[in-house]
Amino acid sequence: MKIIALITARSGSKRLPGKNIKPLGGKPLIAWSIELATRIREFSDVIVSTDGPEIADISREYGAKVPWLRPADLSNDSASSVDVCLHAIDWYENENGGIDGIVLLQPTSPFRSYETVIRGLELFRQVPQGAVVGVSINRAKHPARHQIGADGKLYSPADNIRKTIKGDNEFVITGSFYALSGKYLKKHHAFYGEETYPLVINSRNETLDIDDEWDWMIAEGIVSGGKEPVCG
Image (cartoon, rainbow, N blue to C red; front, top):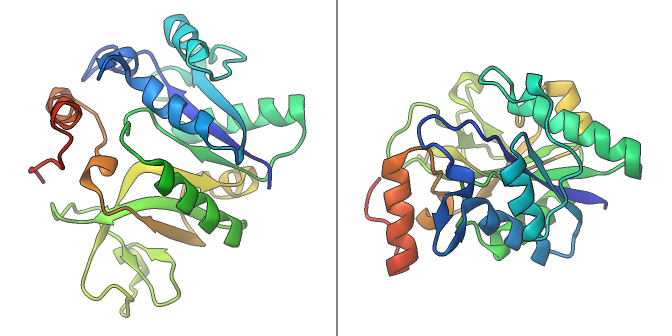
């Protein structure tokens, strides 16, 4: 299968200004995801989609390709991540031919592991017409909860699934891993929907999604101590 890694990094973060290039453990935040992706031979390319020249320069320095700066209409607060990904897919396929899928690696999840990404890729190869998303146990009782059905697929409460293979456990989408085809993305205009399969991630470090200053302090604690965070 021909799969590319796509890392999306907008420059206009409001809760944590400049977070994508903010130093974490001696390197910019986005470098964590780029360095991981470039280690994985299964990826045909590692592409960064950004509107920021500084982010672009740093991304190239760490080994990613940044063929363009994102258009203004895909760089504002109302721009959807789906449209950003579709823009990247359309460009890539026009320049390099068709691909079987993308793996979206958001830079705000710096601690996802090599092993987790490989597991996700292996699962995606088994369900190329579906989507694979990273999930973790809903420890914080987040209302946006999901369950794993007896068929191994991921369902939301609205789907009214009664039997689960995980007992009473509920799961939340972590944002750290998405794998799907361009065809799936165009059909559903979403990263998950029908035929969604969970990549269960048990490590709390890996599921950290840096959104604000509090998350950043947790990330710095992980880097300095190397331990699973106690919160959540």
